[in-house]
Image 1 (cartoon, rainbow, N blue to C red):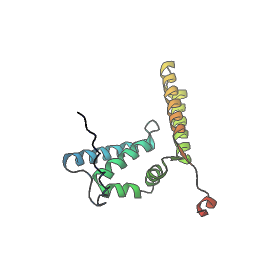
Image 2 (image 1 turned 30 degrees about the horizontal axis):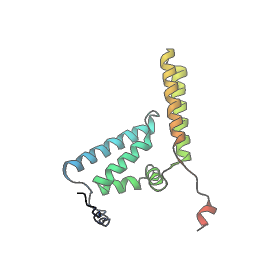
Image 3 (image 1 turned 90 degrees about the vertical axis):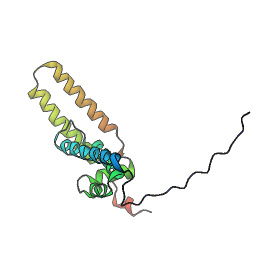
Image 4 (image 1 turned 180 degrees about the vertical axis):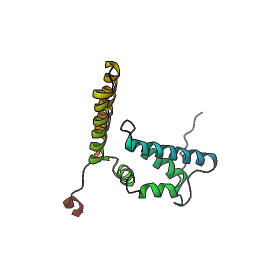
Amino acid sequence: MLTETTPPAAEPLVVADPTTPLVRGPVRVAFLGAGFVCMGLAGLGVFLPLLPTTPFLLVAAACFARSSPRFYRALLGNRVFGPLIRDWREHRAVPLRAKLMAIAAIVLVLGSSVLFAVSHPAPRVGLAGFGAGLCIWLWRLPTRAAETPQALAEP
């Protein structure tokens, strides 16, 4: 015979001390390593338009949030990368300026590669298709509207 039981009461949410990592031991080392690898890829993505910067930054922030509060705070406080991460964390959106700059860099570099560096038609079509797909993906990400002084003054 089956009897109904009431589920146990939910445990209260305990916020961890912000100065201690959420994970320890080998898992912490793995998160730290993944965070640094993603930061390196994000740094390369600043200069290589085929490598997206923002997703690697978000993964690095998630890894550091679990493994090293010090590196997480340093990443959020970075004058270049910090605003992108904070915008995503607070608004789940990418600033329009960041999107436009990324798309312009992709079009400029891939377009010049297709026109001047690649002579065979198949790689040209492949590069153009990849660039178009990447631009569409970037454009479809949620966009954070710029805050106007009037919007900031309203309660």
